[in-house]
Length: 87
Image (cartoon, helix red, strand yellow):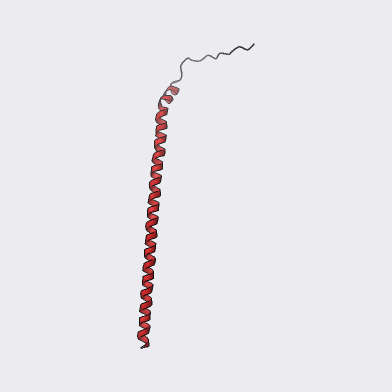
């Protein structure tokens, strides 16, 4: 027949376990807070990136329009100068 083997213990839990058990909720709360802060910062970075890309896209369109206008003016000037030379 089997007998249960009883292992003697000190009778008290170690202080580490008690302290860790007391601090554990605060550690978990800090981890959750860090995750929330990281998500907020990431969202702000993405918004800034999208806003900057939109601004740069608008700048590029404006520059293309300016270049087109300059080309048209240059063509008109060249055409006028050729007309004047032919007279």
